[in-house]
Image 1 (spheres, rainbow, N blue to C red):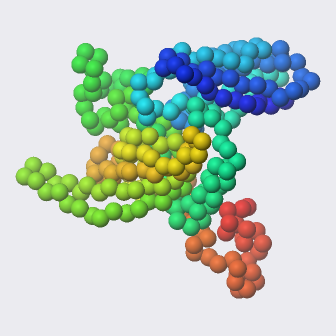
Image 2: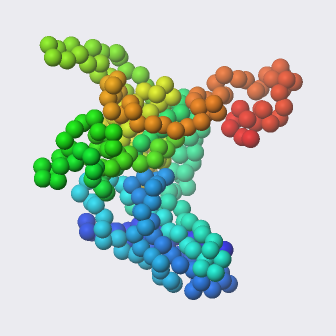
Image 3: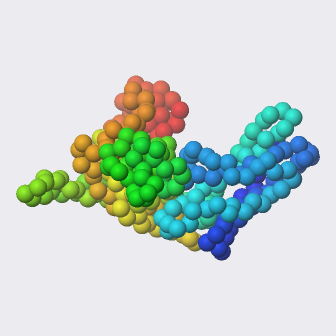
Length: 291
């Protein structure tokens, strides 16, 4: 099978993105392959095909990019289909930020160890939809706005489905002071939290974050550290969503019986003689995330 290399997204226009890719030298006949370019607002999909089939072509200009928002990140991947055998393969997921330097890769690796084994908890990110099909239940074409806030079709976003597929990630959630805001008309418990995690998946304002306690947060600011323009760590400010909001009804479909919510390393010591006598090597390595 062929192998992709040097995939990249480049543009200096607000009207389009140019997607380029190459194929490693091979003895196969590239005329037997069809290439398709797919785009998504989330690293995990769902993916929308925007070009293809392409034969012996390695560049696509995406002229239908919604670029009004500075916070929107578009991801691309290339699919190759071998026509005779029906075999499919995909390139890595790419965005406009480009390649990660070696130093940045080491930074990300160490941060990942920190979050997975010491200070982080299991969380899930629901990337909010910012374009696509409008909600068929609550969107008013004349007024150009939603008619209700508690819509179970768009979850209050105005776009059908509301959010993309949830993505699991490890991060550190800093708890804030508990507050009560009491007025003549309302009673609110507004709490602001800080969330730290790696650069992937990319988080943007208005996304939904669910932590290991099923607390649901709405992101309102995203910052972090970059290296040569590529993110290394994300610093997120978010507010907890009031109980009873429509976001509480968004289903999170996971296997609760086997999910790991906190770092197991923090609750076991594989270095003691007692642990080495009572546990197999597979159990010891399992404490570090290996199977």
